[in-house]
Image 1 (cartoon, rainbow, N blue to C red):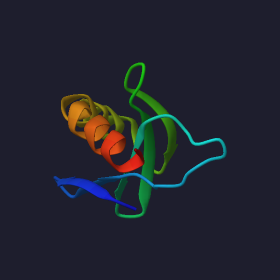
Image 2 (cartoon, rainbow, N blue to C red):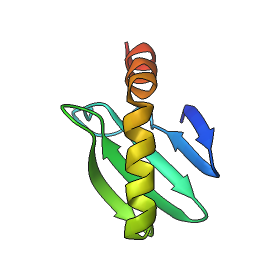
Image 3 (cartoon, rainbow, N blue to C red):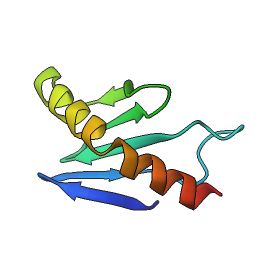
Image 4 (cartoon, rainbow, N blue to C red):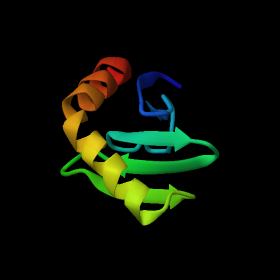
Length: 80
């Protein structure tokens, strides 16, 4: 489970062997027992939310969009 970024109490990571067949590039975000998953391609989009309120999800989505290239590069480097 590579952790790519920690910012503002949020941990951004992905699981290296998630899904069969393997899922497309995405990032998980965890904080204080809540977790969300965002697809990175073709656009940043919420895939799943477990516990974050709407305001926090909007803030997280902005961070995912801002750091999307880092997440995609990390994903591609790790998976290939």
